Length: 416
Image (cartoon, rainbow, N blue to C red; front, side):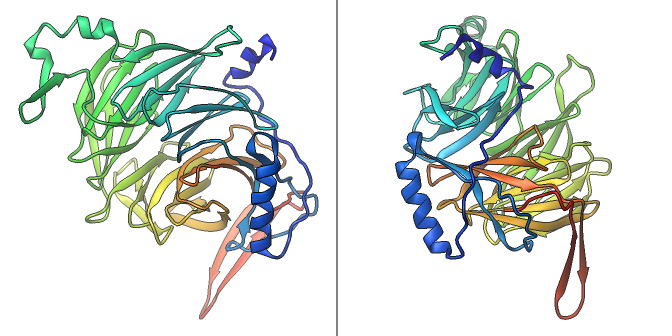
């Protein structure tokens, strides 16, 4: 291992991928069996499938194939993050693994025995991990080749505790006959988000907390929802929290250093949980994924529903967005690919291969081979890498009794 590895952790590092060729089989069951055998034989539990050289045009209902399958976690993969040329994954089994591109070999592991990891985010050379034991842990890229990812601190910090534990006014009721400092989460921290030198944490204790990246100090604690918070995202100075109470809430600040206030409440369907939330790149549309399989879109200008689409027959657990392409992961073990429209979604593909629900999705920041990469983590303990091609135009024309789909593509693109 070389010291130059530290340079690869820069946020803008180029992300590459191998293009080992592979002959596809028409027998899907045989394909799956081959994948299992190859994964068992491959070093580090990695099997590579290449981007095919012969362009083909799939139907929107035809599944894409994964380029790479990565195994190694002993429990369900709970979260993924991209850090330069590295993929960082964490699981319910407490281990955090770092995979190096382009061959996705296992570089190192860290975080053993510190509580099941629910989410992680990267900020420069720091990594923040959210845990089931209600703690946030901070790691930093180190020059020590024996310990590249060095443990830095736990949030709340001891300094934060010492400054508050003596005053009764700093304690809040968390449940009957039980009080905690307001800087503490009292249940699993399920999600993290980053914006403007701030870390936001959402918890099953129904609170949203705000932390300063520079000194790890807790700045605010907000009683945000009436049930567990499942997901967070940020956009243009706003924070969006999705909860099991069926709502997505938008939070903002009047001043850059001021407290957060509730801007809007976005209602999902009755008696469902909102599991995922993401905002369009231009900040105009909020997408919420629910336990009923629907994706609902709200306009940020009016906070009104602009569309709702049954994306899956089972729960939508996660989403990722690249330009006008939205990917949704579900309990039904599939990832569906959608083109976002002004008032709806058009299905343009499906990715299948996982043997368990899709728990997390990440998208590559770079364009590769006329498309981009999507990374998925699943309850089947594996990570898959998918290549999603760009499409110049997708037009859906409805007629009776069938739907005709017209696709115009760049002839230089290849499809899986």
